Image (cartoon, rainbow, N blue to C red; front, top):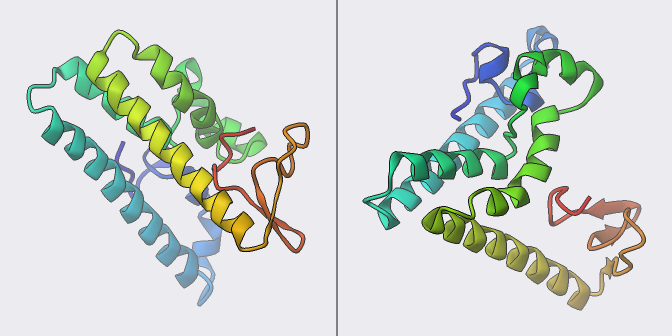
Length: 177
């Protein structure tokens, strides 16, 4: 999925669905710039991940490319809503970033879903291991720096999060919940 800045409801990133603030003089400049930055970053990241897989697997089948593309979407916060895709705009009134929430469940599931596709499964496993490794390294460095790191898995608010003052930082971007 490659999002658009001025596209319709289904072609934009969920975090930028509110348009009224962009029409406010002077203040509208900030969300427009933030949206341009986020859309550009996510598009470049998704294309780079896809191109990297294609470079490593030049003879990948169309099915493997489709599976890898689906994983990239899920891992980058663009979850699939299945039969509820057409209702995404309605669901966004009750839920913030419903595709992002769906992606948090779908990303680890991708390993199971793609079990019969060895190349895709291997890439997904490597990506998930790298993600966990970077998060664990960040938590270790935070602990060594003297910051409070939650280690009790019974406490969902602080488990594997760094606490600074009254703020918790989640190195795993919502995947732990």
